[in-house]
Amino acid sequence: MFRLFFPPAGLTEADRTLLLLLGAAFFIGNYDMSVLSLALPNMQASFNIAEEDLGQVIAAARLGALPAIFLALLSDRIGRRRLLMVTLLGLSVTTAATGFARTTEEFVAIQFCARGFATAEEIIAVIYILEMLPARHRGWGVGFLAAMGGLGAGAASLLYGLVDVLPGGWRALYLIATVPILYIAWLRRRLPESGMFTRYAAASEPALLWQPFRDIWRHHRREMTATALIAAAFWFQLAATLNFMSKYLQEVRHFEPQQVSLMYIVAGAIAILGNTTAGRISDHLGRRPTLVAMLVLHCAATIVFYNTGGWLLSVAWIATLFGYFAVEVMVNAMSGELFPTACRSTASTLRSISGMFAAVAGLAVEGMLYSGLGSHSAAISIISLSSLLAVPVVVLMLRETSGTELS
Image (spheres, rainbow, N blue to C red):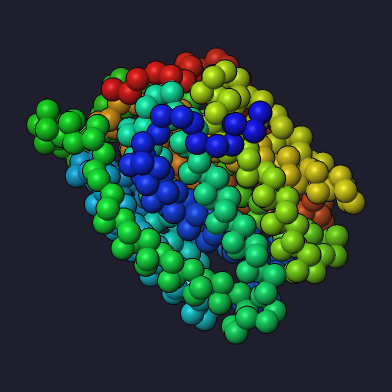
């Protein structure tokens, strides 16, 4: 059983180096997202944000995923490696700038840019893994990237426990992240271009900028529709579910920041196994059944988390994150495996854009439900049911992609 959590046999030293360098993208992106969630009460106090406006502030920052579509277009045209370097450097600048935001508007604008760079970075990293690892190891590889994201969230949790003693409070959490980002950018010079993209570029005439959209519309509408619907159904509830966790623990369950940090680290360390576990299991049993099971688990665990206390709260928190990590692995893997090299990055970005708009809508709906119900717990419990809408889409519209060779 524990073999599920270790690298599969057959990976070369180059494969392992590739995984570590690309995993840094998920580490950084999840660190940034986790700081926003963990320090939400602190930021709310700094900028005097009204309770009913919190969802709108988070939603506005998350809209930054929209510009990622333009970076993805360039990735399908000029290659993966160059865009990875651009997005990583852009993320380092915006992460540092967040620590100096003076107003709510500045904070939202900077985080808008950071989210765009992080989204493009993660999408291209997944495409890299799918194009460069053997078919029998792709699920595990994508799971490893997500596990690195979990480590990023763990690092944010560890540092958040010091938020009351760090100079600048929550702002220091963003500034601390800048140094490792720049170091990773330096290491990325060792990263080769995707071999599959290199062969495609050598064998094809230069394509029009909008050619990937045309290919998707003509040949892959069913797959694009299915992945977009799944992303929308799941991410509609996810932004509120994750971003209000720390606030719920501190204001409803009366946790101190240090207790929240400890819970995130301990429970998160267990939940992170959902990444590699789901990837390895799906390599053997299939992506579709694994995705359906994890969608149901995440929904049920979310409802329990926001409506209970004591030891059951911790168990539900682990299950919620375990399901989230596993769903993200499956959606990332299938979104890349369903499409050819010519439009793979664009298709993955369109799926992310669908999820982003759904997340923004979900945060707005959560705010309206909060106004009517007077409770974030009740509001999130209701919208969490949206993830179940993805189940029939998986069953009826998606083909199995585990083990298939990419074109």
